[in-house]
Length: 229
Image (cartoon, rainbow, N blue to C red; front, side, top):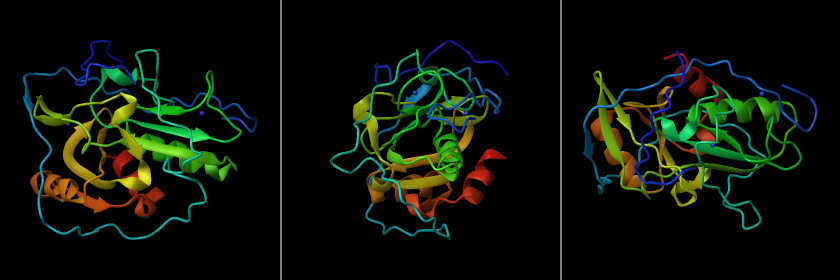
């Protein structure tokens, strides 16, 4: 499927491999997933007093930072000039959570840091592979759905969540609780939808399914299951 150019930016702002050198090469291995959107319904962030139950197992050793260190680079706003490092889609033109990853010495192909993604699971895929090559991550940012007034969109029987690409919509990846594999989809299908509020994540999971997990609990097996759905 090819990338569509019609856009939906719910916050009205724009926000975005192989080599052994400092510059990464293109790696567009995933199928594009355009969506033709119907009427959207405004859905405010849900709050609940329920406790957090982490349902994912296994931890990954992590020497990189997540974007919360005072010396880490700040997130940037993504625009229609920004394409996903893995699938090549124009990021603001598609629904769902997005991500940015910064590296110390290396950089993505064709532009400087950060590496930019139209889905959270693609960012994890890219980062697992790059750190296996010895890349040093300095920051990892994801959409924080506790920080935005998001939409849920019905499209041909699927429920999609709006994208938010302004720098202010990002949080460090260790600062959020992820709802993993819910019925709500993004640009590349089921994804990891992050909330800085644990109650927000728990409420979203109760309504839409999935599992709760933290950054440290997201493994390559977790990402592989999402990528194959």
